[in-house]
Image (cartoon, rainbow, N blue to C red; front, side, top):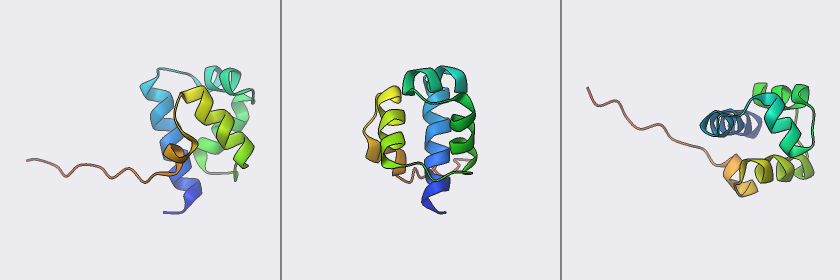
Length: 76
């Protein structure tokens, strides 16, 4: 998984956890909702400035957006 995919998954997960729409996150971060969507699809390589804006809007450290989150194993 490349960093764009990691970023995409983390932004989407954190946005959903905070019950934000792409529009809401875009407003908080000062970017367009279309750009938020492009980040979440892994279509763009966000600059460190944008990474910082998104992190601030989600109330996380920028590095948290690049951490690989390992899913817990199924407990059948």
